Length: 465
Length: 139
Image (cartoon, rainbow over all chains, first blue to last red; front, side, top):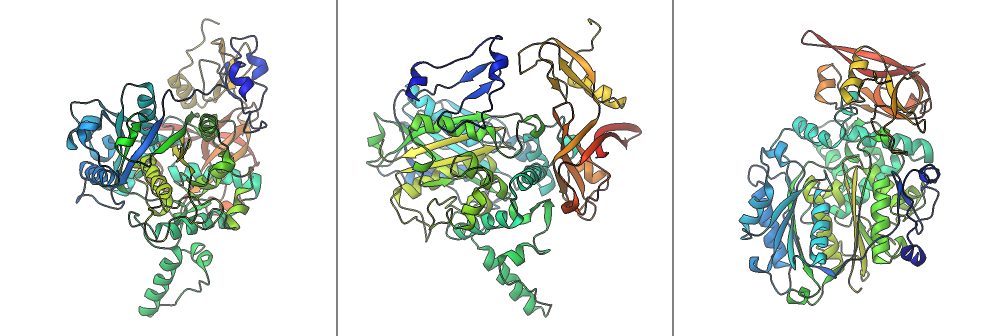
């Protein structure tokens, strides 16, 4: 890798383009993966010009909060929680800019221009404030842009806001607003919904690798087990408990009690209807209102806020065609592979070094595919690892200790920042209730996917760099 | 071929309205694009020509949707009457999205990826106008 860095084999112009297009990046190893985009081979990954630390992180509770709380209210809750979790405190005068991640306040709340709105509420105006949009990866992008701005030297401290208030609209409008993150010209007229696009991807994964509905159910069960331990989660309940409550209710009503011996029986019943085959209701994340706040600081000033900075070791971002039909493969996400390649390379670590990871489980199939795209497991092998409990809270690679989007909730624009909040807690050893992992976390990751995989942001965090 | 229609979305959709399934082909490297594209992202050429697609392909991936988009709900699809969204791998190489018809949508476990398909044009009456959408059915 060091050789390729000194001498990046950049292929340009037309003579060599045809040659390069024959290279299949799916056949290459993670370490030497070469991404071909148009005529250019991109191999070199720069370093941050100066170190950047996460010095404080907090969030509002996730749930159905409208009208009691709207975006501004949720953001203030998140800001106050993050201030509280910044060891030596932090004040508006310390913060140089406010970067807001939000997907679609325009459609959800008839409100655009969130940057200054959010900045003003916490006393940051007239400093720079802007909104970043990349569907469900919006605040992952805001986080990444804050990292790059601090590393560039232009700002020392940035507050990152992620927020979304979705329940102001009825479900049919929410679904239709979310569909704007997919291709409106060719996919939407063919009937694509978001669960539909992920159901389509699932069908291809099932066919190629023999993945089953039970493999996906295990992901939902695991994430609800974690979310039950998260006081900030929207559904703080295990699937087993939901099943038992339903059986008790039927018994009380004198109705026939279903013969559910375990969660799988319950999840295969009509209580868990098909939304988009093979995905059922419990394969889908939630419609949620919520916000998260991150304080990022340059190495020069990080110690003003904490003696335990969590360093940004790597950041990467990838993209892919909006439409599934314009992609090379339907069984993995090229944007995730590219984002993680960049992040691993910048951090100088590999998949084997990641101890805890928050994965973007907008649908259960998305968590399974990400486990493979991030290099944790070979393609087609993640299901077996999940069945063996490796990704459970007490497993060798705990995934979505927060409960994930499935149980914690998915206020789309807030999700990327909220993933960083969970990593902050796990690395500090302050995760609530019974979900703190039992080992010291030195290296962790967040994986934030936008839409049906058109955007991906991967961030790697380390306590010591 | 200065008479070639511009390679725009609207011209592609206009062909579709005339029940013609068209793509663009790069005259330099032979790559075919459906839906149509003006720039060949494989070799950077803009030397394109319109080509008529055979309309034949295989089912690459699909889903059966019970909670549909407003357009499909208006067409009468619902929980008891689901529809299939699909991605089709065309014989000429590219993939395309379309509604899959002529299958038992309520028994998706019986639908096989790899099934040979052919194009069909789906007409919907909306306020007196006929809308044409791309569809595929078992060949």
